[in-house]
Image (cartoon, rainbow, N blue to C red; front, side):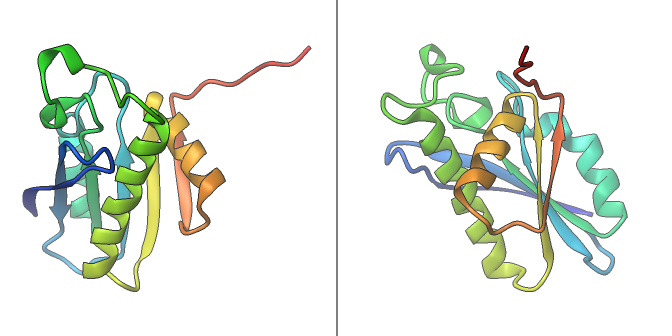
Amino acid sequence: MVKEDFYYDSADKLTKIHAVKWIPEIEVKGIIQIAHGMLEHIDRYDHFAKFMASQGIVVVGNDHLGHGSSLLTENDRGFFSQEDGNKTVIEDMRRLKEIMREEYKNLSYFMLGHSMGSFLVRQYISMYDDLDGVLIVGTGYQQYA
């Protein structure tokens, strides 16, 4: 397994988004993109990503705006953006998917969202129809009477 860190431009036009991919050294079967939770960072998923890579799955994820190595200043911790924060983060997620698609054109592509990331993935799939599936973990819901 090879682990690569890289950066790409955020939709906020200010931030370089930190991303990591875990690449199997065996035949690649598919891709999972992780959307992490509030005040987390993508390297928190290192153990899971290494396991998935051992099974032939490329894993990729980014530190969302205001998180991990995508943090501009300490005062920005947990803060997305002045305008359209969720949309900006989702556009960053989509850009990461596009970057991965340039390298891996014909593989099944899934997103996994944990906690806050689960809400981002749910919003992503309401905006775009370009995934083969999603995994929603540690999410919430609105219970109706």
